[in-house]
Image (cartoon, rainbow, N blue to C red):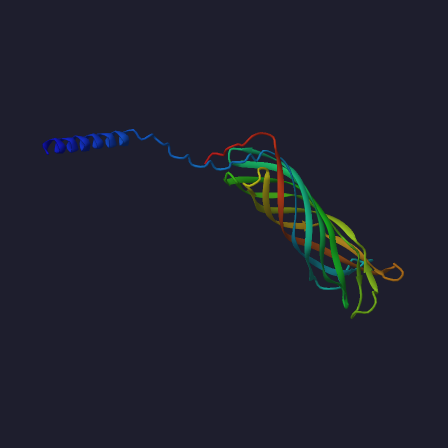
Length: 255
């Protein structure tokens, strides 16, 4: 009996030692590394396309063509609509700052009723606009740029036929192209799922030079002796997908 107890005691001691040895021999496992945040380079050229909405105000009055005497009080008419846009540009990043230049062209359908002569109204429509400008931005995060923009713009408005109380057109105002300037602000975000693809949204205010237009008889095209002076101001919001052709690899901003 004593031999059996001694054998069991020895076996237990041997088993405990073996278990302790097993615990001490567990291999070391390194903790998984934290994912590295995507930090795109903003240096490079790009192309973009998208669309948006625009709202235009037209401050106008009628004056005598021969004497220049104002005949009506100032009035404001409005236009609303949509547009598609294409854009190209280049940027340069240094630390958290991004500077660049760009150009864009808008295909527009922005229209509204305009009363350019007392008792006569018609549809005034803007059909295109282009702009060239520059922007300066700051990287809030490596993927997010907020910026301000400004530059030169030019827009075109089609001719407007004016009628009274829905009858056939009696007067016509010729189409025109006017130069102007714009200022804007926006954000641009790098989309992580496809390197090089960005999403940009921008608000813009544009103001155009004043235009003086003669009012003509619709049937004959002969001036009727009156003209209208118009000052156009535009608010627009645009959103675009941008693909950037980077000049180099990722550049990590300092935060």
